[in-house]
Amino acid sequence: MFSNEGRQKERTGKYGTPRVEYLQELVTEFQQTVSEEAKEQIVAHLANFGYDPLNYEYLRQLHVLDLFLDCLTEPNEKLVEFGVGGISNCCPDPANAAAIVSSGGIPLLVSCLSSAVENTVLSTITSLYYLCTPSTSKEILDPLVVEAIRGFANSDANCRSRNVARAFIEKFVDGREAASQSLQRELAWHAFASVMTPTVQRELLSGHDERLDLGRR
Image (tube, rainbow, N blue to C red; front, side):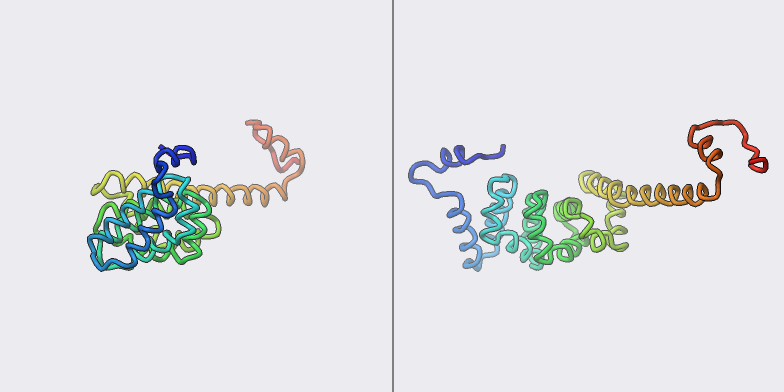
């Protein structure tokens, strides 16, 4: 369930650590530890905070989104998985999405489509789904990216990844193609209508089925 400030105070307690301070401790620990296992646990923990919108401002303030993006370049597949999972949790929020895009997140996410880890692929497609806007569509809807996602949409390997990939294709690819075809029909109609007399136009638009002798018009 999502939190509110009153509920957070109840969870923190009189002598507890405020949420933002606790998040800062996690970030500092991640930066200082040399243990890969500890890093994995910290990133997974930070990613879970992305479920709660009340944490979004804190995550941006502490540059946790950049930390997630940095994980995508790591050779450790667990860090990649948890990092992209954190991005997936956060990117439905417009401010988070803008921060991810401005930090160069799209090409980093695209590179994760080739991962052999199912959760990584699932989180990646989900992230691209939320990040795809008119300003980012040229980059996200690159033919190679669409081809990769369409491959997951047609795959029988993983039901969750397949469903998300199909949702992506239906909304951003098939939907755009349908809109383009509709626009082409509209333009063709206007071109045709420009050479018709007003009487013919009225009869066509009214849905009359009678045959029109255009030669007599």
